[in-house]
Length: 348
Length: 150
Image 1 (cartoon, each protein chain N blue to C red):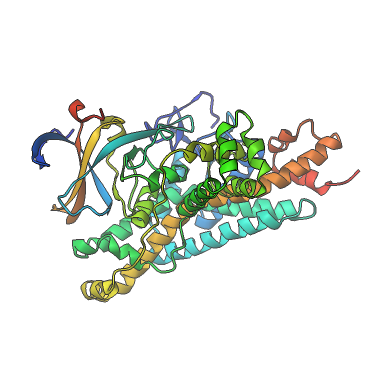
Image 2: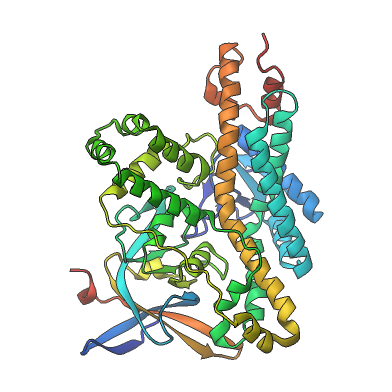
């Protein structure tokens, strides 16, 4: 069952999967991770096994985690076969698991049971991320079947009837980014200093505490760089440069329009008849899972950054006590070793 | 491959355009059925986790990419429309298009191959009926060098 040859990209253009060339294994995710994160992602697949009552074959090669195509297909088939009730239940669980991970990442203590609980919650959250793409496609099919029964003029506005859909984090990030640009424009001295900074952009921004707080908020809470590798630095420089690059252009933030047209619900109720409740449940499910799918990119990074700060605090303690050679080693020693090190945190 | 030639009269001039792509309409924006949204394309491609073409994006361009993602947020807020190779009714592009009420065509399969940055493209949508039932089809026209940005 071992993998002996190199991984090749066999999904042209998608960038979603890297498969082993014997066509038996899929790298999930499609990028290498350190051992700690590989262990946590493998733990997440074990959560998926319990969630769906199936087994998932996993191998590691070249710092990537591979899942056998046959076991992956079994999982996809199970996702495809979910009823509306199952899907609603799974979305509720997913929301709760992800929120629980983010809370724990913020509050967890390094010593005691802190990291053990944090890692378990991270695995539960990532377990949902593993199949969200396929889950989304299954929901799309339900949604399209419901919408096809309505007259064409309602097919887009019907989504406005979704209940309790949370805001999109992407738009919240965009709005905050543009408010920051406006705030800079109201401080001409700061704006000039940023424009003329040459290799000292970070220092210039740190001189204005209000501005640095905004840069840190954007970098720590939103997915600014499309890579969930926890080893990567928090992208303060990326955000600082992005702000500087957009200071001189004519970017505007367009405020979303979400108003539900008057009488829409009544009109659609007339057309949907007995299916109205089913339609609204499906639309709500689709909106909720679609927004979660996008927001989770940001939530994962937000939780991971909080986790990263604690991990590096532990790493610094271990380096000072000669238990690690370098702080970055914390990402390569594996989950159990991190838990052992955390148990000794602050010791002699 | 779609090779249909469409004659379009715009501003008193007759244009001969080629149908480049079909896809699913995630949102019609403010464009009525059969009317056209017209703009210059900006093709953004992911390469080694970097989004090539994103930094050069200009306000009011049409964003063309395989799949949008949250790191394109600023550009999407300022795009005239989005065209993607992949995605379904609840993909990222569809979600943002509904929020921002932008014309968005998803699942075209080949947008990033057939459209180049700087191409002037024309996007419309129509309700069609086929054997499966009613579908709304997004159509992208253009592709001639003469219509590229000067």
